Image (cartoon, rainbow, N blue to C red; front, top):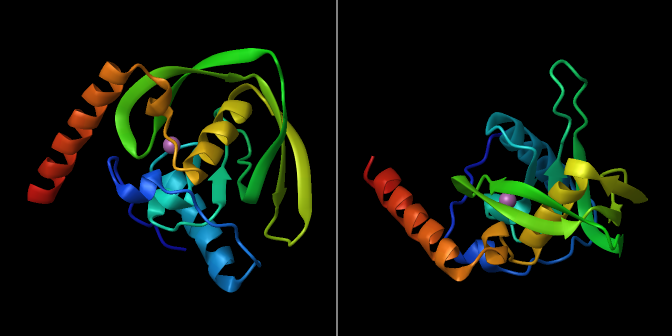
Length: 173
Ligand code: NI
């Protein structure tokens, strides 16, 4: 497993609608393993393939937060939201591609998601709480959408300028 570099916003690859995965190849299995490793290392609770520069519909997540609880790594290929609750939840979201910036985003409180697993089988599962927010945030990434797209334009521009500055500083270091 390899920790892959995480792209920082703004980057055209983070604004791209990604392609469906046609079959579970060794390459996709390696991508899933690397993405989990990269996410845990960050540390984060979710990561989408475009964040490591791969424009395919793959995301990983593990929203188990309790200290000492067993990890629950998930790899979702071609995930689709097939039902959303009317009830909404507001979470202060962040993103590994937008480090140290946070903003409140309102999303459906519960979603039902269908995806292809690394086992080649189709899975359907309902998510709520943090898991629901996380899976929606990551699926947005696969459609070139970031959580800051839900914020007011001024706030979004301010965050984007901060990230441009961060990238310049990192390039110089
Ligand atoms: Ni993100």
